Structure formats: C-alpha cells, structure tokens
Length: 257
Image 1 (cartoon, helix red, strand yellow):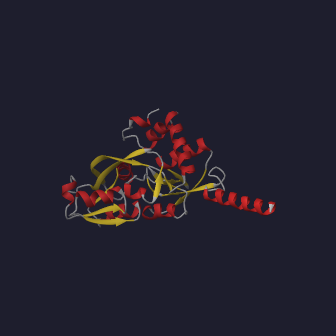
Image 2: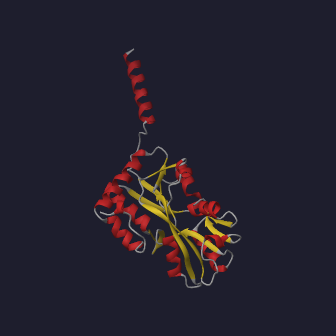
Image 3: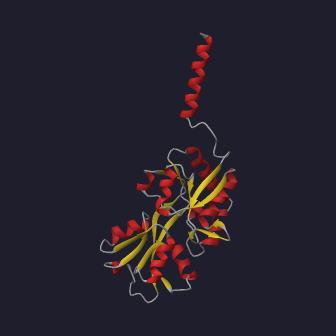
C-alpha cells in the first residue's frame, strides 16, 4: 500500500513538472535564433558573422542574462512560423509587433519602433504614396510595409517577396516601380548600391514597436530577454549600438540611458 502511494505521488509529481515546462532551462541550452542575412543595418552577415543592430542588441542582452545563442539565416516570410513550431527559440529581424502576429507568437518588450520608407530608382517620378496607384510595388510578404501598401494605396499592385535581397534586385532591374521597407535598410541600400542609383522618396514614423519573438507561452525566455533589455538600456549599450548602426534615426526617450 505504501509503495503504491509513493508510486502514485511520484507519477503525479512528474506530471506536474511536465505541465510546468520542466526540463532544460533557457540558460542551459544553446538557443537557436532565426534571422536574416541580407537586410543591413538591422540584420545581416559580415565576414561570416551575423550582425546588425537587432542581432548585436540580442547578443548584448544574452551576455547580461547568460544565454547562449546560435544564429541561423532564414526567409522573413517563414520566420515566425518557424518560431511557433520550435525550429527557432527566438526571431530577430526588426519584427513589428502587430496584433495579427501576437496571435501566433509572444514578443519581448519593445526595443525600437518601425519607420517605413518609399524607395525608388533615381529619376523616378514617384514622390509620395498617391503616386504608387497603378504601379508595381515591392514589399516583403507579411510585413508592416505589405499591410501599409494594401490599406493606404489599394490601387497599387503589391509584388510580394520572401526576403529583402530579391525585392531590392527587382527594384534595380525595373521589375517593380517602388519598394516599401524599413527606413534604415532603405538608406543603406542607397549608400551601398553600385549597379543602380536609388533614393528614399518619403519616410514616415509609425507607433508599431519592434520586438524579439518567442514561442507562445515561453515566459521564461521572454522574461530573460526583457530583463536583459532593461540592463542594456540602463548601461547605455542600446544607444551605443543605435549610434553605430542607425545614426540617422531618432532615439526615443524610453531607450536613453
């Protein structure tokens, strides 16, 4: 009878631990980070290393919280789904925290805000959003830019791409007339383009925050990221990285040391 009771209690304890997410903690394993390789200055590869504002910020957060990271390149269009199905522990890609995305993943506290731009080739007659009507316009699938174009200029023909590099190539080749994307990435395109002259026609700030995405219910990892974010804001690391990668963008008061 006593052995039976002990066995029952042990089984119940195992069940409770399993239900509470027992197992390897986030500090004991290497966390897989899904990111992009082609979207400077936020997320890109340089000399074989994943870098950019978002990735360097996440590295700084990880250092504060004793987290081990492994960065892996993927397409933005599949990134959040890969977090939801456990292929990645974290998504780092200047991800706008929209209500629709929050249905599938959880987000860290905001670490920046979305500033969008309309980009064209130099010499284009497009000067603002109304001129996009009837034009072929590149957007990254399922991004704020995609949603903005559909809601703001419904007469534009959205040409959706899974990542930044093919969208940029389409703009340079003339396959599309304009490109809607993050301002920082658009400005980098202007500086680094050698095979076509590009320009930023118009930029507009949104109130949509960026966040690192984790699987729904992973409160342990979400909390670690949030605590680390507080630390890198407080010690000035956030501003240093912002000045390094995003020097022309304004610094919101909440991120100042």
